[in-house]
Amino acid sequence: MAEPTLEAIDDYNELKGDKKKIVYIVVLVSLIIGAIYSISYNFLGNAKGALPIDDPIAKVPVSKALH
Image (cartoon, rainbow, N blue to C red; front, side, top):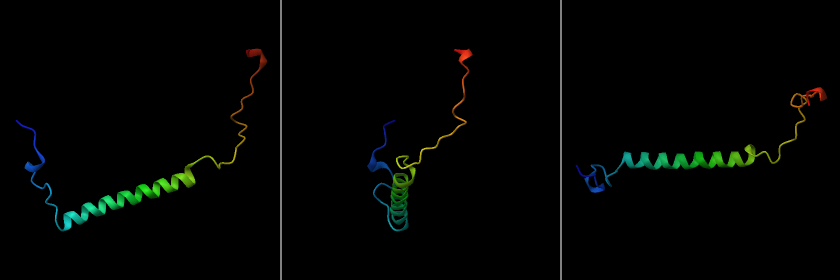
């Protein structure tokens, strides 16, 4: 059994009408969602501008008797 070629596939290079519009819409929406995610991550997701938090719970006192 030989591997299929692009010419043997039924719908190769035959997208017309609504199918072609749907493919373009899906690609365009995917790019827009990716751009929105990237922009929001760069503005909101980075910790560069985050305020330092001094959490006293994270600092557990250790007795010198344990050393």
